[in-house]
Image (cartoon, rainbow, N blue to C red):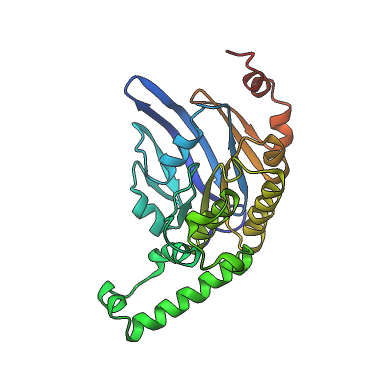
Length: 260
């Protein structure tokens, strides 16, 4: 069941994460409300990707708690996170390069498949009906992302911008309630960024998906985000609306390098 619009879907409470003597995150707390686009920004090395890795269970913090849909947890694995409705894209594209676009998107449906794998191996009866239903859903996502012309193309043959779009599609195929996007526009040209911005906004508005977004393009962040949290060297130095963040002197100093 989805959380009511505007209710707190995710809470990050006092998260600290260290690798040996390096403190990646230091007592970080913020929340994410259902239906919003919540941006995480900060200079390189600020701890942004580490924060996403904590949320979906790739990293296990030494201190703090993640509360998702009202259920607190100190640690989780990515498999459990996926089944609870958290999907993820990555800085470095993580697709099956030898498989077609369609087949890559179908892998995103694995958490929605209920028949035993032997039924699917035989491709008979209930398993066949289930696969047809999943394929129909994937075709809807292909239409939504306007990638019909490449649906049977091996992903490895696609240009970078289209691969990023396919990765977004695979995440959407899981029908997440919380979508984590790690620099979805990195390395894109202006036209590709505009397209991706449009798709992110449409996912949020049409599907009602809550989004946590890491992005370095401040113009994009300020245009599409409802609220922004700012990290710097593992500390939280700002949290608020785009207008509040623009006026935050500590954030300005961090981006200009004044505070270091």
